[in-house]
Figure (cartoon, one colour):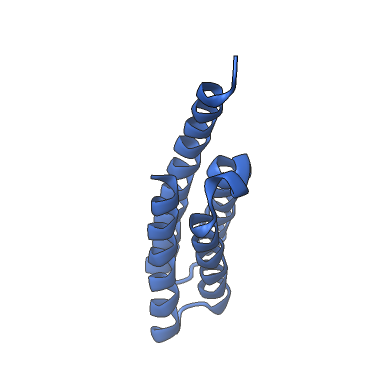
Length: 115
C-alpha cells in the first residue's frame, strides 16, 4: 500500500510539473515538484526491505516537510495559487503515507522477529 501510494503521489507531482511547464508557472516550485516526484517514484519502486524504515515512513515524512515548506514560501511570495495548493495536496498525502508506512513497518518487524 505504501509503495503504490508513493507511486500515485509521484505521478500526481509529475502532472503538476508538466502543467507548471505548460502554463509557465514559477520555475523554482515547478522544478522542485519534479525533484520530489522523482524521489517519490524512486521510493515507491524500491523494495521495502531495501528501503528500510526511511523508505517506509521516514522518507515520505521528510519529503512532505519539504513540500510544506515550498507551499508556505509559495503563498508568501504570491505565486500562482493552483501550483501552491497542488503542492500542499501532495504534502498532505505524503505525510499520511509516511505516518501509515512508519506504523506498518514497525508492526511488520515486530511480528516477524523470532521470539
